[in-house]
Length: 607
Image (cartoon, rainbow, N blue to C red; front, side, top):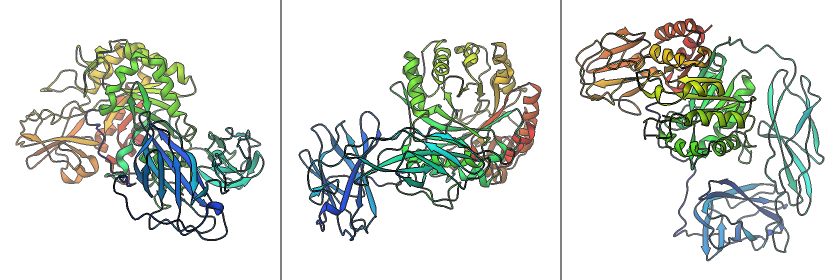
């Protein structure tokens, strides 16, 4: 997708430089009534994110706190938040801010930091005493993760969960049982029966251990459970109706998973591609970790209507997707890696396809969100051809990569790919073995849009998503029908091809001619990027003035736009059905209207 670059995203958490921090608080109470627990929350190889949690385990209020520890040589902090952090050699000190020093009995507070190196903290002190609430060193270690729970005795309203015990150097006291990331019980044994559930509903369960100092360890793997009974899932037909949800949309676009519910779109789709994971050093990796699994949602913002808490193991988009799947069990979610900006890493990945596939599965099956994703989508733009950068991996690289992914993920998971729709002779479809790779994939998302646009600033004006060719088209083969025909000729089954729809328009300015083929002077103004605008804006700001090749265009003032409407989408869906295609997909949800009229057109057109 030509325009899929990642928008700059402002972090909601303030990262403070360490130099010159002043105003350090004075300890007011001994650590015999409090604990400090450390966790490494992220590790990206060249650095890591750490978090300390201070908890008042006593019976009186703590007015301030100071945590001290030693890092081995070569490990250091580069930025911190929610505490004033200083160092003297390898000794580090963190003191509360003016607004988070007071802790009532039972209350907790966390502060975090980014660092470099691979060392772990040692010789921890909290307000001068041991971090485990005692008076001797070293501090108590947190317990290990319990085993992933198993589920049995599932009824309409209950489920029995069992798990293998965690270990701890001073003993495990009890276990927190988490349902959809929220604690629902604390038990002393290694089993629990959860009751009061809703029939025919999906839930996700995990467990974490507490030691005798009330420190919590890492969360276990997640177990998906669906209660018996309930109503029949909404019919979706046999066609795939897939939409991309963009990770960065939660910032400037203010588009969240809940919008799929309020727009009515969630009941009309079958699949979601979550875009995008990055490809670095030949491996899959989460891109924006804050948006993906840390951003906190209030009750009114969340799908479930329940607010996130500071200590729940999973927040952000991933938790919202988990809640969406519980509400709409028919929806499957795939993690999409690559895109226009992040495709440069696939060349290195193809050099060791098996290692790449293993890294991707590790991300998809991370215990914190293993129940969220049902598969993986690869968006390599473009194998053995040029996109943002040029790839020279050879024609077999894409097939080999898909083969390795299928071997690693097995039949349980969906494995798909978004691919070029360049149907020209000797074009991008001819550059890679898409026919040979099809055997390993569930389907291809054929990107039948972005054919023409103001990246050619002088024009000629042309629809960016023509269904068919037309007299005067600027480039032969740049249309959906030619791309689909070429892929079929290479042996790709029709049912493994999805037709692509853009929920946006592409436009020029300086245009005097209403019909396609006019000259231009540059890109028309857009909300987020010149030359691109959402359908929800264009339908009112520059209404359609004509149609060509199965899509629409609009001439308003000196601007000329092309985009799909409910009417043209209906025509394209009829064509897709007649071609025997597997369905349709679109880029991306936030371009649609608040009542999801483009998603509705796709749904109606594929029934």
